[in-house]
Length: 98
Image 1 (cartoon, rainbow, N blue to C red):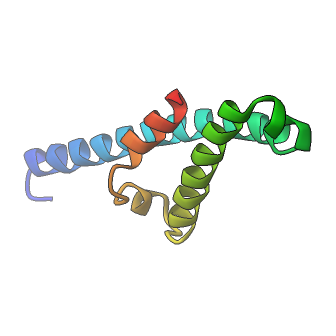
Image 2 (tube, rainbow, N blue to C red):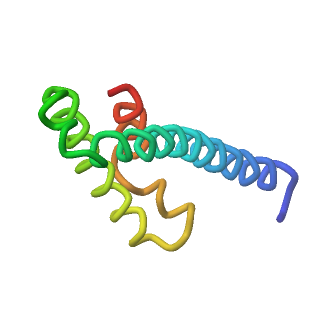
């Protein structure tokens, strides 16, 4: 580096990237924890679909979107590449609120 300023600018850039990655991971873990819990309940019994049709339908929609997002992430072997997925953070936060 030619100067401290260049080093500080690159350090700030990496800090911002890692902060975004941490926020995405936090949201991801929250959504995944809920998804695993609800998947066992809602897909584990055929009676659930009949007893809770609205909840089953809502979860089916979330399930489809979450699985699709996980496939998109799986195609990117490096963690920082996941940040390039369009609306990743917003999607995870929305799925977490459903």
